[in-house]
Every structure is written in C-alpha cells, then in structure tokens.
Image (tube, rainbow, N blue to C red):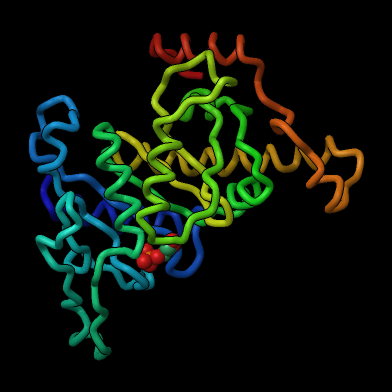
Length: 266
Ligand code: 13P
C-alpha cells in the first residue's frame, strides 16, 4: 500500500469513529500497516520491516490532512514526519504532528499479530462500562458471531501510553479462556478497563466493523444485565458475578461459525 493511501485510511477511520459515536474530541487512535511484502502471507518474520501510518496525537480530527499523518517503523522511529502544511493558508499556528501517545500499544499489537492490517482504539461508552464492571462482552448478536467470533475479555487497567498497556493487551489478544472451547479464531478485540476498546482487523474496514459491533454487543449486554438484575440500583448491578447473561448458546455459535466459514451470510 502507498503511504498516501494508508494516510487517507487513517483519517477516514478517525472521522468514522467520531461519526459513529465511538470517540469524542481527540480521543482514540488508529494505525494502518504498510506491508513491506504485500503479496506474502502475513508472517512475524518479515513484519518487522513493515511501516505504520499512525494517527497524530491530540489534533482535532477535522483538521487532519494526509501530510499530517506520521509514518513510523516497527521500532517506533518516525521515518516520515507528519507536517501541517495547511497552517499558513488557514492562518493558524501549525499543529505538531507527533505520533499518537498510544504508539507503544499499536506497535505491540502489530508485532504480536502479523495478521493485523489495522488497529483501532476507541473510547466507546458501553465497552468502557463493561470494562469497569469487569464483565467480558459475550457473543450475544449475529454480527458478534460473524465478525468477532469470541467473547471480548477485559484487560486490567494500565496507564495509557505505557509499554505495560501494550504488553497486557497482546497477552489478552493471544490468550484463550476455558469458556471459549468452540472457536480457535484469533481474537480481534479486547476491552481496556476504564479506557475503551482495542480492535484489530485484516484491514481498516474490518477493524472498524469489529469496534462498532463490539460496542453494540456491549450495550445490549449492559441492558440485559440491568433487566436481569433483581435490584436495578448500583449495588444490584455490581453484585452480578460470572458472565453477563444473554450469550447465544455455544452449540449454536459453533453452528453459525460453520455457516459463516462456508461463505453464507448470517
Ligand atoms: P492521542 O491523541 O495521543 O492518540 O491520545 C488519545 C487517546 O485516546 C489515548 O488513549
């Protein structure tokens, strides 16, 4: 992929997250992988030579132009700086276009998962609620079966932008859990406690689709748990333990995964 195309995809994804209500202000960030060997199967052995187009830190998304998107290598070094070429023309101070503060998180995920063509971090509301409750998002809707395939676990809180956050996310992305015996599909989403959601996809559309449907599933799971709760108050909700009710039964999920694998729409 050309730099220009990857940079445009980053901007469109940021604006898309905003439009879909998955972020507010300058929250969230996006990276798009530029593969060195585009025709080869994704493999960690050559992924180290890839580059990332990374959303810049703290710039309101409506100001972004392709030139403002920095390109970094897999060690996090900027190989093409982002520059605010429109500042003069618009008569304002130029933005400094440094890579997102969550670069360590994006690098960690891109390193751990050579299949990831894009990584998206949102601050979406219901995913955050589920994270604070410590409740994984179940496979409770058809799009969850089709696009996500597994429950979405919660990663315990780590400081935003830290190496520790990146390490905790990659551990969870590559981990499995006893209640997921029906699928070995690679995990595509994790919730960050108090801090939203991280998704990956084969490309940017895939990563964004996962983010949108996990948020929908989280909202549904939240309302189901409220309705299920004998006590609608704070205590009743917090006293819920184990998985949130409302999962599609494992055997049915398995069946639907087979249907999806055969190419039929669900
Ligand atoms: P950046 O503007 O540095 O990407 O930070 C936003 C954010 O959401 C941090 O988690």
